[in-house]
Length: 334
Ligand code: NAD
Ligand code: WQD
Image 1 (cartoon, rainbow, N blue to C red):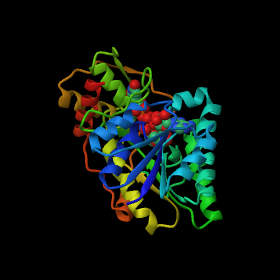
Image 2: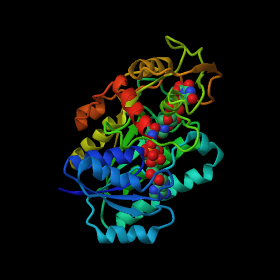
Image 3: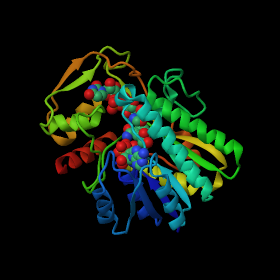
């Protein structure tokens, strides 16, 4: 048994990962400032798993003394670092906020870890770091960093920070997980994604239109060089992402230094295919219209997920249909 400190553990991906960790015999300690989540989520994690969750309200940027206390009070074996801001459009408007929260927050976390001799960390990165210099399927040997927005650059900078840390001290052990497009929710309908305001991402938007809470989905572009003219992405069930973290945690001790893995399905789905699958699986109509291309969108993004399978034994299990059913169940409960 070991104890994992989960930053951002009441958020969308963090909460699902907490469930998987508890179900696999780990103890967890959640640290979150609730800027994009609610403390109630911890109770829901307990309800799903029947296990206790230790929860601290703590901001990685501003509550450094509290963070130090948390490391003092608990015997922590490893950290999973989800805490961060994640909106591409918001990051373009407020770059300082993003650099501060995502980079400075991570620096504070690393300082506390170093001080308390906890040197194993799994970090939430993004397929966005591949940027525009390579083409799908993206694999981990491809260059990173040619990113077009501040959010993506914060992920790139933190990846490099971990590389430097591992070069400076061989006791650091870092797994970087580059998520493709996580969607769906826990089968219980108790936890899922709760975007504030009007969502930027496709699946939450589809769900809100289907629920009658938003009027029409605008499909950004219909003339891409893809079979149906709409963009292709690698959607992956959030439970698969969570399971990928458990595989990474059990694999981390066999690894050394910094290692990056894609978490994707290796399968591309177009915007129209996702909408059609959602309509079929939920029997709900999603009213849509075609609009202009969205600036910065890459036409085709999907993973080569072989490395995570070969080295961590992780393979995504769930298909688009289940992703849609689970996303809709969560929407109906929200
Ligand atoms: P989320 O917003 O639901 O969860 C992030 C959590 O971190 C929230 O609970 C928030 O309150 C907390 N948080 C933010 N800043 C904090 C701070 N300074 N101190 C303490 N807590 C803080 O987001 P998510 O979708 O669960 O994403 C988790 C991580 O995965 C993020 O780092 C995100 O960039 C990354 N990621 C997400 C996606 C995606 O599509 N959801 C894709 C790739 C990578
Ligand atoms: C998917 C497709 C849109 C909304 C983003 C971040 C990435 C990662 C995941 C954090 C695209 C189309 C969307 C809409 C649409 N997040 N779309 N109408 O852009 O692949 O990735 O989230 O790390 O970093 O960039 O995801 O869900 O926004 O878009 O037509 O209202 O849906 O054009 O083709 P994206 P998305």
